[in-house]
Each structure stands twice: as C-alpha cells, then as structure tokens.
Image (cartoon, rainbow, N blue to C red; front, side, top):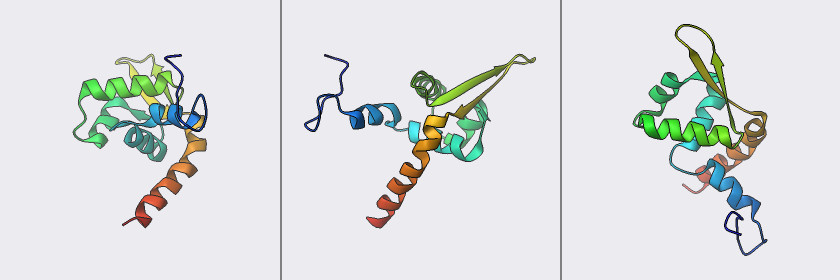
Amino acid sequence: MANEHMCPCTVACPLQKTMNMIGGRWKMSILCSLSNDGPTRYNDIKRKMGSISNTMLAKSLKELEDDGLVKRTEYLEVPIRVEYEITDSVRSLIPILVEFAVWGNSLQ
C-alpha cells in the first residue's frame, strides 16, 4: 500500500507517520511558537518565523491543520481575523519534544 508508512520494525510504522506530520524545516518551529504564544494570527507567526515565505507558511499551516495538529479559527469581523493554535494532540506531544531538546543539548 502506497500510503502505509513502512519501516523494518513494523508493517506500518507510527514513528514514520509522526515524523511525516511534524517534520520539515518549519513545522516544529510553528508548533513551538504556537505552544509558547497561544492563539496567534498569521502575520504574527510569519514575523516570528523570520525568513519563511508566505507560500511555505500557508502550506505548513494547512498541512498541520489537515493532520489535526493546529486549529484554525476564523472570526467574522471586518477585516476577518484568523487565529491558529495547537490542538490537544500537540499539547500531549510537548513533553516529548522537550525531551528531544534535552537529548539534543546533551550531544554538544
């Protein structure tokens, strides 16, 4: 099956699935920023990410939303206000990411 995540340890590797969801140059930074800042508007995320293009930020946010990691809330105001925030799934992932950071620091 083309959509299955294969690895030597299992037929459908959940670790590979996870890495596909949070991997890439910008997704971890976006999740970290939203985790620290709470609900955030698009331009504020872009400002914090620095050199990310509008296309890449929009694509990354859309993928994170499609994977259930980011919630997009649109407020019917003039002009329309849109905020992004992490979901409970990501909140449960934060302690694991902190451990990854501790591990990474220990390698220096």
